Every structure is written in C-alpha cells, then in structure tokens.
Length: 175
Image: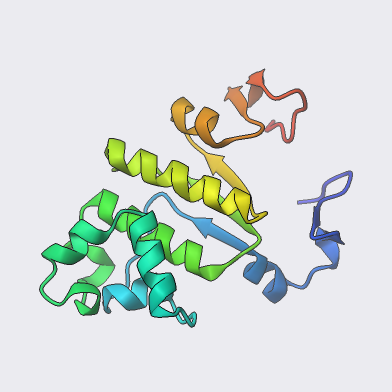
C-alpha cells in the first residue's frame, strides 16, 4: 500500500530495501504460530547457527525449562505436527525463542500473551526489554494493556480504528 512520509530501517528507506533483505530484518511472531514436526531444538533455532550457551540463555529467557524437563528427550524431542502435543502457551514460548534467535532488527508480536499464564506475561516482558536494550524495535499488537504499558516507550489505544489515548504522536491510524 502506498504511504506518505518516510519509513526507514537502519537509515535505509523501506521502498529501497529488496524483499529478501527486508524479510531478514523483520520477524513477525504470529498469535497462532506453526510448529514443525521436528525437534524442539530445530523449532527454536530454525536453521540459524545457535551455540549451546545462547540456546540455554533463550530457553531460560522464555521460560521453557520446565517443558524441556517433561519431554522424554529434552530439546531433542520431536514435536508433533503443528505442536499438537504442546499447550498454546508452550507453542508461544517456542516461537518467541525462535524469534529471539533470528536476530532481526524489528519484531512484530501479534497477541503474544494469548494462551499464556502470568509467568508467560513476565517472560514476554523480560524478552521485550532485553531486545530493546539490544537496540531492537519491538511492535506489539495486543489487547493486554499491562503488557503494552510495561514494555512500551510509546503506545496507542485504538477504538474503531481511531486513537483514544496513548503516545503524543499517532504512528498509524487505520481508516
């Protein structure tokens, strides 16, 4: 869709970035993520070279240790197609771990707390803050005002596509 103004990633105009490069810069974390019928480790690393130390760090970060303890072969356990042997919150944690390992510049999270308990919310808050400290941009689409306010420098509340409260500047308005 055409837009007016400038959208830049790392100082480069969005329209000047080729699609493959753009896809490497942005990681979209879906509300209902797909889990491959492969090992938990594969689903976290997703073809990225991740050292064991970094893998352990991200497992701790997204609170997957308890799940791994329950699995018969730990991170080497093969998950069922689309993660049907995982809860919604566990699937969300796996996909957040995978997103973290992608080392993108921009992360877009669609309802990341869906299916998660209070511990999941705290894990996501830590995850977002850590990414922000690394200079990453995190955009969260959520109905969870606690998550929005706990993690965001700027946030908007929209009602019927119009801003009703939030940051000083409207970043985007849906018509």
